[in-house]
Picture 1 (cartoon, one colour):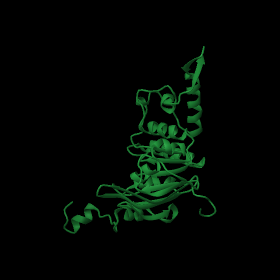
Picture 2 (cartoon, helix red, strand yellow):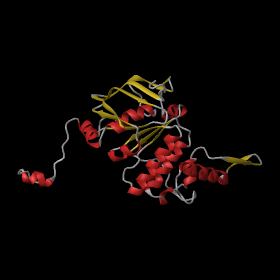
Picture 3 (cartoon, one colour):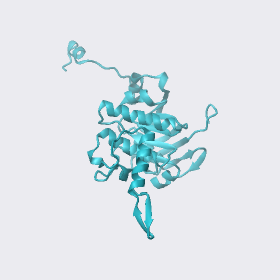
Picture 4 (spheres, one colour):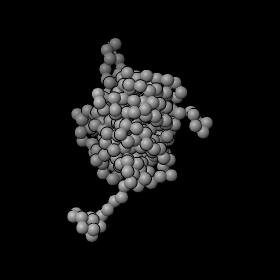
Length: 265
């Protein structure tokens, strides 16, 4: 608990080793209700493994996890979902040949019975999909469009919307704005703001550091499987975050400056 607000998530002493590689070394993470935490680090820093521990996809060797002050143990993503933890992976896991509504309700489609026989209730499913998209501010004209015909930003929004439809307490997003156009990036960031405003705690993993300063409340930096720093978003800068990520003082040198000192470009 901090400032009188109980933690939505509290991970303590999380460690994970894959043979000789210590992927996570006694890592801790806290998250408040409605908070957006930027989890950053270079490739191999351990941020994806830590998020997979929280989402139930990876079982840690040691450490504890608490959700709303209650100790939990996840052996699978189904266990994490039961505790209202959802993760949107970078590959989205959408079915391209299925329409928008079908992707949102995949595996839990509403049904109606005719003479005792269950049938898919398409009208209800599309109506619920439209309501859900409108509540989240997701702009898609037709819920019958196949996902393969959507833009990258729309596909990302559908993946986030599907996760949000499970009423999560915690939503983890892995590189949600990678390879998106500028307008699509803003739409996804606005969706993050909408979800967090509803009280959902968000963990944002991204290499687009500028995005952190648009939606995050706090940043946690990982380096070689360990926590190295936490910063409130208003008390840091992109330059400091870069320095922390690379683990040494970072100074950008232009090609012109390099040529002036005899270094070839």
